[in-house]
Length: 210
Image 1: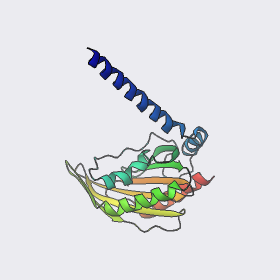
Image 2: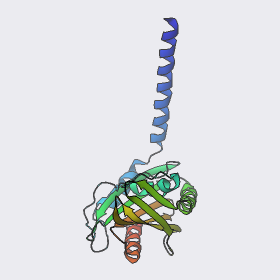
Image 3: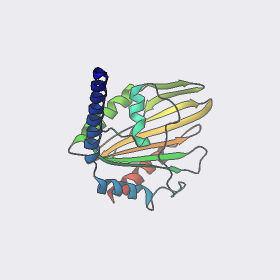
Image 4: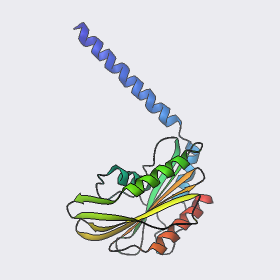
């Protein structure tokens, strides 16, 4: 009986330590910066013609990316930015006029120079993510896209093939602007216009700088 009591006490202590650790992570958040990022994405967003100005909930990855590198590249645009030194983040999506077109946008701010480390890690992950094969008719192949003149550093790629048996394409663009990571996905059926993706990215960067 006494041994059982000590087991329970130990479990409660571990739970308390876990809770404290969670509080420490939350304490690093900058609530003012968080509100600012949300405002940028939700208050009269300046997007290219053809995108709804009414933001919706964060974009969701429409397939199970088994490869951790592919997940790492796609998660930031879904509002799941790398957590190390993260101080604020916000995410939203905007429907486009083309069939299956959606823009998923996320902003994440970091303490110190951590954003520089994260964009380097994401660039490596992007180069390692070669394909997504999630079964059930989902098979997407990755190719890197040229990108220049955006932010301090930027990487981009296209995933194209079939999603649940239907033609599907997705552009992913990751840009570091100072201490902020800007993550963008631009999706559509059959193909996605690269020039439109770049125009969308420049619009989002303009919003972030305002």
